[in-house]
Image (cartoon, rainbow, N blue to C red; front, side, top):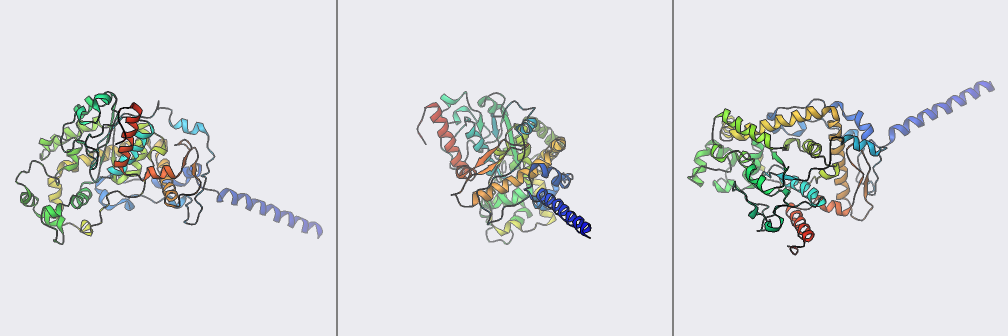
Length: 437
């Protein structure tokens, strides 16, 4: 009996040890090594058809953050993210990169998340001491030469001194590659951004207060009233229909020839759009914003810390009339007067998904999930009190180690206009040519 009891005790101890080992393995924080297994499968299938864009992100994406540990509101802010990686794992992801791209033009299209993107790019430009083409008039409206299609070195502040060094342009400007090539340093990359045309129309119409322009302020459905007869509404404002904010606005800013904006010749549209596609290094798709930032990071050989962004929306619209459904006739009219916008968006959306397919075998979706978690974690840290220890992010497959502190958070949430002033001051101090603006 004594022997049997001894065996039972030993067996109980053995089972307890097994349970303890399993618990320790499962209870730890889920970061890149475990993310590879946890989130690769849900992302294998994505909708590549741009017509899905108006349905919203929730219908296209499988939420994976439930597979990742989350900060609760009560969790202390001085947290270190644990990841047992090595420095070689980061370098292996950059074996084709010789260094980050630091010659860059961003074509900033209104109401496409371009302000949030501008903050990301301005942070990077400041970090790398880039030389920006800055308007001599200041940047209250963050505009350089828009809506003109021309741009010259003389449009840039202190161009006599800095004219041979411009390697960054981010203010509202219509894309003109020939003119911009004369201003920018050789090898400059061109980045654009687009949004599904109907969603873009809804947002821009109220942001620009066009419901007041067309005397539709008190109409229960200003968007529908305009689209019932667009030509009639536009003539109420101007008899000149050579350019309208409601017609192919994105294509115009992205560089489509202005005199062809109203063509219905699909072959001609495709020729012009294909040419633009050869000039752009990458075009961000608003409906796949974080996926686009990850792709941008890969194409420009940047670190993941460079593409972190605030989750606060800039210039968000709250007019409930923006969401009123449109009739089939109204939608048809919108597609008719914005044929180039629709065709260009479809082209760059397809181009984006081809790039995703090419990168899928290199851990693209794993990186997207890691990036989403990192964005959420950093923003939660920045929203908490400002008097605690930095948030330490260790090395991973996609980033060098870095820390997030109060200064980092302020930069993440700084307005584009303030970032531009800060970068311009850095430029003038560096070259000792002007005082703080």
